[in-house]
Amino acid sequence: MTRTSTCVYHLFVLSWYIFLNFYISREGEDPRKSQIFLNGGQWKYLTFLNLVLQAIFFGVACLEDVLKRTKGKKDIKFVTAFRDLLFTTLAFPISTFVFLSFWILFLYDRELVYPKALDNIFPVWLNHGMHTFILPFSLVEVILRPHCYPLRKKGLTLLAAACLAYVSRVLWIYSETGTWVYPVFAKLSPGGLAAFFSLSYIFTIGIYLFGEKLNHWKWGDTMQPRKKRK
Image (cartoon, rainbow, N blue to C red; front, side, top):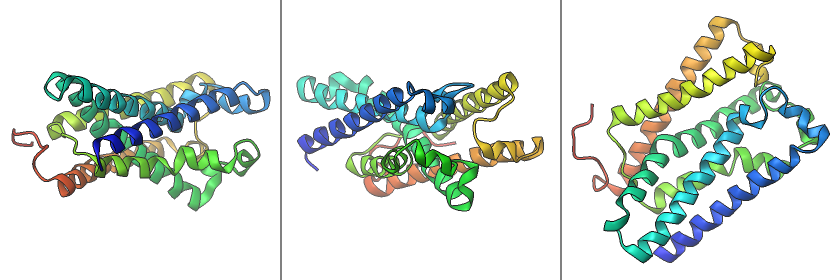
């Protein structure tokens, strides 16, 4: 894909995520729909946090596209490095995790994650915008351009910090309100919750490693750090 096409693609996806975030924020003002966001607001849901994350990433990608045209590659190394770090450690793993975990639970028993009553509140296209299109956009980004992965220890540490922060928020919301963010958590014992969170993190690590291998398969060793991985 040419550089111009890449810029257009990034701008298109950025516009899509901005639209989704704006639409959802406006929907939250509806008294009937705002009930869903009680006890933690919309930011208690990983789905909505991911939409903001994707908007930030594609915003950085657009900025890098523009700066690369005006200043050249050498003068924007920091922006490029930040773009790669954001995509490899957060944007790709989290979007893939949201896609897979949502649809696995949805197909098993949708009441555990997205009760049927929500169909009368959120249109079908919005559900797919939040939970389906996020993966194709991330995969296209992998194929579109190479991303320099950090040392594996650093990448997994940043990912672990993000996961721990979200789990801590979920537990804090429960301790303050007595309600779980997702219905599936209410079905689990304390031991079951610990196992669920642990397996989810292991699953996320697998996604991170898959992204790393996918990047290597497409682009080879040209974008890999020189230091030996640990």
